[in-house]
Amino acid sequence: MSKAIVVTSGKGGVGKTTTTANLGTALALMDKKVCLIDTDIGLRNLDVVMGLENRIIYDLVDVIEGRCRLNQALIRDKRFEFLSLLPAAQTSDKSAVTGEGMIEIINELKEDYDYIVIDCPAGIEQGFQSAVAGADAAIVVTTPEQSSVRDADRIIGLLENEAIERPQLVVNRIRSHMMDSGDMLDIDDIIQILSIDLLGIVVDDDEVIKASNRGTPVVLEPSKKSSIAYRNIARRILGESVPLQSLEQEKGILSKVKNFFRMN
Amino acid sequence: MPETNQLIALKGTKEGLTLFINEKCSLEDAYVELEQKLIEDKPKGNDPIVPVIVQFGHRYVDEGEKHLIKNMIEKHNRFSVESFESRVVLKEEALRWKEESETTIVHRVIRSGQVLDVEGDVLLIGDVNPGGKIAATGNIYIMGKLHGVAHSGTNGDEDSFIAASYMEPSQLRIAHYISRAPDYETEGVYMECGVIDKEQDKIVIDHLNVLANKNRRIGTFERRMNHE
Image (cartoon, rainbow over the protein chains, first blue to last red):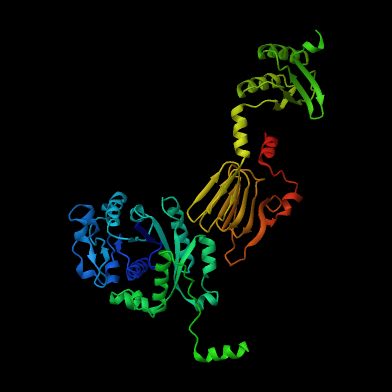
C-alpha cells in the first residue's frame, strides 16, 4: 500500500522543504520508491534543494492543465533510480492547482511509488487546502519558537477536519544550549501544547544549509547529526521503533575523563 | 355568591398582596369580575398605591393578555402590578431553559484559531491552546489548561464563572467584563476560577473554594428560574 504524506507547518521558513527533501531521500536510501511533489507554486525550491533545477521541463501546473503527461513532468533524481520529483510551476497562476487535480495525480503516482511526499506551501489558503487534499498522513514541522508553535497548532486544527491520519510532529532547528538555558521552548512544552505524537527532532546544523546550497540533501552524509535525525524519522515512518536522538553536545575527552572520576 | 365561586381573590401572602385569578374559568369572565372588583375597591381619597402580585395558577397567559390585565389593574390608581406568576411555562420556553442549563461535554483540544461556542454550561476535557477561544452562555469548566480566551455568560450572565485545572489565560471575559493577562511573564495557577467581584467591579481569579463560600447557585437552571 503506498502512502501520500504532506509536510506542512503554517509558518514559513521552518524547514518544510528541507524536511521533504531529506525525508524523501532517506526513504529512497531504504530502497523505497519515492516521489516528491512541490506544491509551492510561484516559490518553488524543492528542486533547488534536491539539485535538480536544471532538469525541469514541465511542472505540476502543466500536468493539471493537460499540457503534458504526468510521466513527462517527473524528474528522476540523479542519485536514485526510484526517487522522482514533480516540480512546482514558477510562473503560472496558482489557482490552477485544485484539490481534485492533486487527488488525481496522487492516485496515478500511487501505482508506481511507495511514498509520495508533498511539500506544502506556507499559509492556510487554497495552496494548503489542495496540498492536503490528496494526502493520507501529515507531518507538521515546527521550530522551538512561540510563533512557529502557534501556527503549527492552527494547522493541526485544520488537519483534524481532513480525512487523514493524526498528524505527527517534527521539531526542527533545535539548539540544545538554548533549550538547556530555558531560552527556547523545550520539546516537552511543545508536545504538551500541540498534543500530537512526536515523529522526530532535528538539531540546528550548519551542514543542512551547506548541503541545501550544494543541492545534495544532508541525509546523504551519514556522519552528520541532522542526517541521522532524518534517517531516524524515515525509519519511524517505515514502522521501526527508534529512540530519540540525545540532544547533549558531543563532549570533549577532558569532560569524559571528569565524568569517569565522578562516577567512582 | 359562595366563596369558592369567586374568580378573583385578593389575599395577603408572605410574598405580599397577591391577586389570584381562577385558573379554570374563561379569561373574559375573569376580566368582568376583575373590573367589578376594582370599581368596588376604588380608592377613597389619597390612599397609597399598593403593589400586587398577580397569580395565574395553572393558566398560561401570553404577553398581550398580561399587558391588558396590567392596564386594567393600574388604571384605577389603586394597585400596581409588581409581577406576574404562573405555575406553567410554554414547552418551547422550557426546552430553551433546558438547553441553556444543560452542560455540554466536549473532549478535544481547542487549538489556535478555533472557537467553541456553547449554549448553557460547558465542560471541556482538554486544553484551550493559545489563540483558541471557548465561550458559553453559562459557566465554563475546563479539565485541562486554559491558555487562550474564555468567555462565560455570553448573554450577560454576571454570575457565571470560569473554572480550570490550570489557568494561564490570555483573556478572561465574563458577561461584558474583560480582563487580560499582565504584560510581564507569569506562571499559571492550578485549580482556580475567574468570577466577577462586584465590589471591585472586575474579574478576579481566586481559589475554587470561593464558589462554595459565596454560596453561589452553580446550576444555570436554578439561576435562570430565579431571574424569571
